[in-house]
Length: 115
Image 1 (cartoon, rainbow, N blue to C red):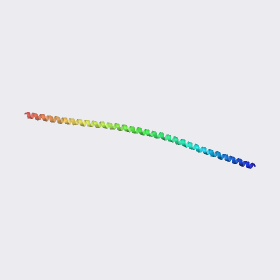
Image 2 (image 1 turned 30 degrees about the vertical axis):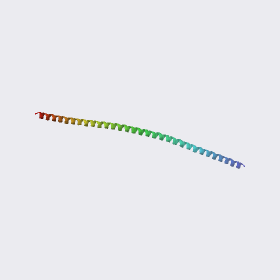
Image 3 (image 1 turned 45 degrees about the vertical axis):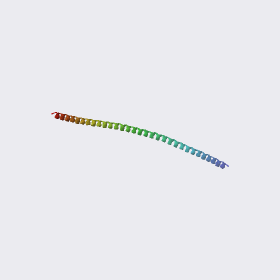
């Protein structure tokens, strides 16, 4: 009878331990899943932050490049305008010389006709 009670006691303890182990295993799985969810969430937030930072950096680079292009285009336009004005002035000077020479020729012809 003692042996039977020891067997039953041992069997009861074994059942209790297996139930407790199953419960502990399930809790461990839930804890593991919770930890994975937390880690994935933190990683996603860190990726969002990193991508946002990269986006801000790229925007700043594009803005800087756009500004430089505008400034250089304006400077190039100013140089082209200056060169065009210089060309116009030289044409005016050449036209004035032709006009003066023509007038001198007309005056000389008039003088010759008067003689």
